[in-house]
Image (cartoon, rainbow, N blue to C red):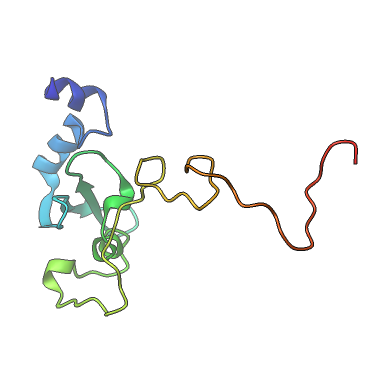
Length: 131
């Protein structure tokens, strides 16, 4: 079953083509705390090395932590494992984008949240038909 998923889907980890390309041309650079593995390969036409990630499970770009995101987009040439990076005290731990999941943020009064939305107050009058 896993082999069929790898052949016919791109969102469940990596495809057979990506695995083959990684095996032939990829050099493992490191792994993040979520189990995603990062690779570097041959130069692209504009002179920068090709960089890619094999996700641990569902392929979700927001699952890449900030340090690896900078390396993937050539903002830095040094991958996070080779840096002595210490987060600032005001930095929060990375979380993947939760939009569309049960963990997504729903403000008070949202149609998804239970309860009733507070009435509008102040100088605003809601439009009603015929008024």
